[in-house]
Image (cartoon, rainbow, N blue to C red; front, side, top):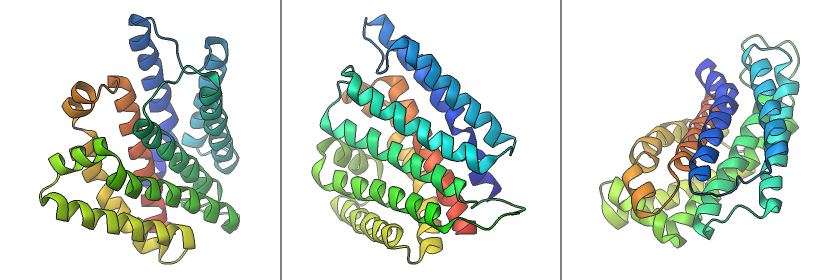
Length: 242
């Protein structure tokens, strides 16, 4: 439980760090950041502020809610900015993970993962966060069927070929139903917390495939890896304190 809280509360630090290096990578090719520069600094400042208070356990519930709001606003601003030119398959990967991270912060804001809980848990916030993670799992299952890029990444990264891919599709679908319905959450989160480290190592960690073959920017892929680590943190919290 503590490991999950540490990973999730420190996620905004990695998110800001990788975003800065992504913008530096884009500056070399004269590309603009997703958010205009004056607002980008305010956005990162808010993220670091929320992460700092969450990390020290000061008003963690309130600042977890603030982190969820900050991430939602920044993602919406990036979408409206018009500078984010990504393929549809990459948009699904990016936005679905952002939704899951927001869900993780809502789970944290509900009081889950607290070692010494002084206030009762907010079950409505936790349920909302679980639904957000369920949406992410639906998107992963969808990508395994309809995204050529994701299918090739899994086929080259896991043994068993097409049969293993279809089994993963079914597993992600079952996990999504569990998170969306609220049934067997602890068991589903335990399974997800086993799957995600393997995905990070063998699928997301295949930088040669994503960066060289699919032209995903290096620091964008690193940011996606960090998002999956944050989702893993949320899964650990639910697996141990669901």
